Length: 184
Picture (cartoon, rainbow, N blue to C red):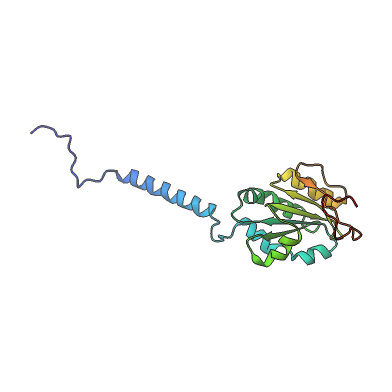
């Protein structure tokens, strides 16, 4: 018999060097996945910020403006906006309060109803006296959040950005029988 192209099945497919390289790549990918999933702290960044935030009544009474975010851990836009919210929290610590409330937590049902949450992320903006001065629906960039935080801290009008509006208050004098089509 001449030279054979058949390999002995008892011999390994890869050499020692290739096996070590594959093991190193697998370990690096495993470590990367571990880090992406939160490492030893598997809480979502939003949940971590929510745990650090003040209770809403405390934030509204402490003389600082407040940004209230209604969020959910499964909300992709909320998760995308989280690093910008963390940057605002870090940069303006002591000047503006961030309060995060998870819409999936039944504890926050009264607040969800009170602020008419019907989409997330929903941001409510309060002045230093705890009065609502505006609302934002949808995601915000870090620059937009910075502009909003600065306006709240300075006590100036909120920036004119799409999806941001002031919140109007109904006057007590409106007849309880008045409907959206009545004129008096």
